[in-house]
Image (cartoon, rainbow, N blue to C red; front, side):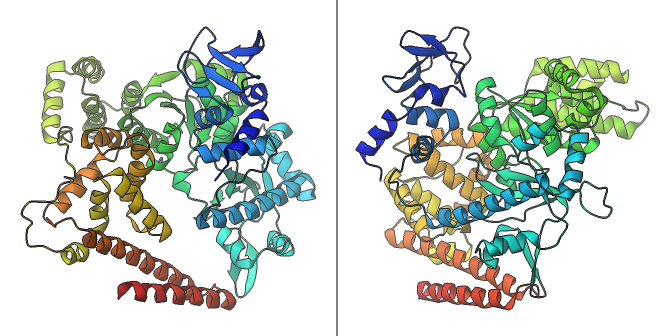
Length: 605
């Protein structure tokens, strides 16, 4: 762990004005500085920076403090990560706790990916093919400065140049394959990305997780974008492109601008809106919303204006509203997306359009549902009604319902009374999920347990729910279980949604609560959209009324670890069975599987 002396030296070495100035416009005030608080809206500066005292604190909202606390607040870092970043800023070596095994593995991926990024960038700027790619990017409106800002590169046409470069850099083929940069075919290694413009994908700390490659010479029968395959470091459902660069803008403006594609993000940043990110061309996920919520609960959705983009916007609205976000939508007219709008009308007009054409979610849904609607087509009318009825039902506002039903009745040229009857009938057929059905785990052992035993629970694969129930008994018990799961690498064996609930309990709830309170935890679950799963888990456990004992907990934990080992063996076997897996890699995988199987058999006894 970090010593108090090291922390003191780190704080004293920090130039507070230099640390804060990227986030706050500072004005000299006496011996220190003042500025508008980056953590809340204000018109009169109350954020104070003292070089002498090494403090950066808002006396309005109370956020900030030491340089470590300021970094924790402004970048939403843990204490250790904030110390690590501050040490990096000050070029100091700090004796931190050793990283976990998975962090060490990921670090190797980061190093290889960073080397690959350097390779792609050099290929763009210093080769003949790079000149052609640069011309394409310049013709798309990207200046050299923007290209360098986004660290855009180029994968060469030759099939194995990156592989040979990494091989000469003494990296193992297995690691290159695991990174998603190289593939094997008939005992030869080839680059995954060839003849594509490369966009690096980083995390919030700037670590390179993977890449996305875009065709640029009109190639047919090829996907426009090719992404790094899923790796332990690169998980598309938990990544937001450009978040690293957008954090400062998000903090300053207390909002995030969400797009569907890289070029839309770049177009928006070119227009001076720096808080732009995108969700890797995939549907928005709960994991991405969790990341966004660390920074802000205000979002501007800028999805494509075609049918697919409208449907994606509907889904995003549902997800964000369930998490308590304030939502605005930019409904683009005259172009498919932000990038095309900029190409057609220029950056200045785009910025003006962006700032003056944001509408609320309900208005967007109404406009989109009624746009180009044929009022003589009954099927189209019923489809539009369903979309609008759903949106009004979720709002739960009689005032808004009356306002939009009146508007829709005028548009369809029918009576408001007839539309209101349809709306009431629709709500009866499609009731909202009852929000007052709070249910959960009773921490007390049952007085008269039903004649069921742990083996029944294991047979029905409900042990992970049972483990969670033990974690609600006390904070101490929960942390003890979590330590065991981490030590045995068993947490990935949880179903993904249950894993989300577990992480929420350990890392967030128990971080601010010393005791488990059902009502408080349910509130937190609702903000993350996880209540339904929690409630259904409780129902699934109701028929298994088993006494709470240390032996029962041990059996449940053992079963989860066994499940984890089985999954690991299955994944390895699938890799071994692939024809393209080289023989030397197969041998290594077989050895890994054998060791895991030995561990599995020992546990099973």
